[in-house]
Image (tube, rainbow, N blue to C red):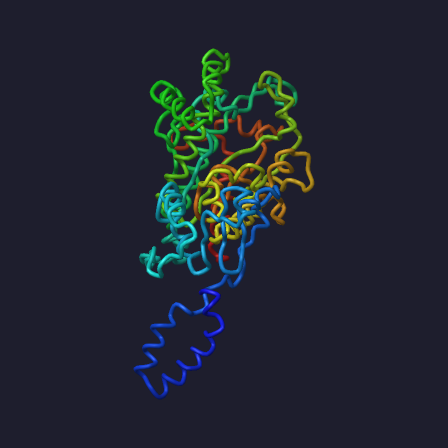
Length: 455
């Protein structure tokens, strides 16, 4: 609505009210001519960013006003009042829904094309949800779509060493006088299979981002990817100026080249593939399954060999906690909009709170203390107000649309846990696995049940 129209708007409304009573034809004309003069929609409740901003510099990229959320390419553009895009209050629901219907790169293109223009009212209308199966006492999760992401990839111990996600200990009195050697990727995969079995029995439709040891969401093992796609990945990142020619030359002769290629090239692509697969499935919620290690103990490892730790705790991460430099790219600003305009963050909090309470009950592992001595929690996270739950801008937290829980059930290097996880007492989907993971799976399932009951 233009500023020039504001003074006459009340008089048009009065004239229209009398016209509707005495001159219907004139009333119709007034309705048509004053439609554009209706007060614009405003946010009834302004979007909250208290869990999204870890570093104050992040706010240089956006401004929340009652009528719209404005995004800026940089702090200079904001100081000059030149937003690159605006999502108005009456567009918020439609924009947030795009993340559940389109790939992220398509949403970014729509955002860039939109700019500050208003969408016509019939743009991106939200279709009615298709009918779902109704839950009952035997199938309380009927109609629910759940995505499971078993963390990491490695299918053997050498692959796990490349990932850096394993536990190895020498035989000692504290390790039960036995050597300990296992890796997280197999624990998460076996746990996901157990969760899927239980959720499907309760009526849910379940999707897993990976189902084979050693094969990631890209459909390739790291060794296969390195053989067929490494060169193209190097060229792509060089073109995007993510790496330099000097780095490529240095890495090619580095004694730990595989660890560098995995961390810098393979893993980011695998994580994006996981997010794309999850979003294409359009789940009602996502469980991201991980196991932790006590970081201070991990830092004391010698040549990757750890000692048993006395620390054990659980935690969960939800989207948020953006730090300096994390909104430079348009895609990052678009995902910020999703977190601001949707219910993803509050619903992720509810799901993660349910997971923490269920995890403590099922596993007996306490919640991480607050405060604590874990640098990544203080440096990269925001405490969400519930013990054990933190906002953290992890790749999947940022890229996956919808409610999610990124769970860390226990510390694998804890003295008793390492002994339990080293055992191979059962077979899950053809994999040898420890019985300890059964209670972890039960905790995730219970979390889903509590979350659904609380909605």
